[in-house]
Length: 190
Image 1 (cartoon, rainbow, N blue to C red):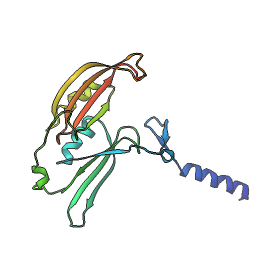
Image 2 (cartoon, one colour):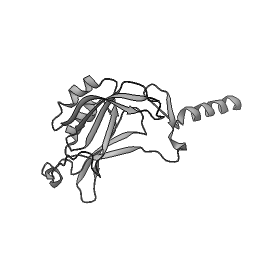
Image 3 (cartoon, helix red, strand yellow):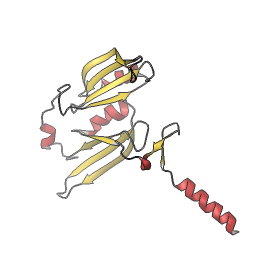
Image 4 (cartoon, rainbow, N blue to C red):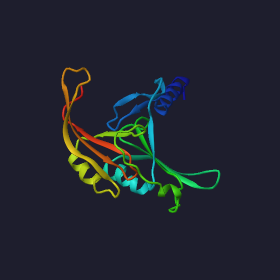
């Protein structure tokens, strides 16, 4: 093999082996994560029963599992950590973490669930969908899900203030008391 073709092969291998651009489901570049000064990557929810949580986030909302491992603590107890994605492998990931995994009598499972809307330390996890009717029917069937607001038409000022953003808004509490807003945009955001 001549040295010139070897060099070309090495360059091609390097180019195809290194992928610093994050791609969405349609293979369009999202952005280069490695070149960002700061990136909000993940929110991790502490859950009582990860299988019930998966019924909501994976089965009803359609998120895809990208990481699923059982972790062992120094004291020998186990936890299970799952990351789910909607579009991107690196950004906007939702983590579900069941501590004391495999221990149905864990004290954590007995703690009261507080469902307090719009209070400090409360979080709202917002998902957009292009088919709210279908997702809504699945979501409200998940055990432990509580409806805070059924799908309702709302208008918000646009980012530049020149128009309004039209959206159907719905809000639920997940089985662990986390507030989830599930929306369908009716007009593009400007």
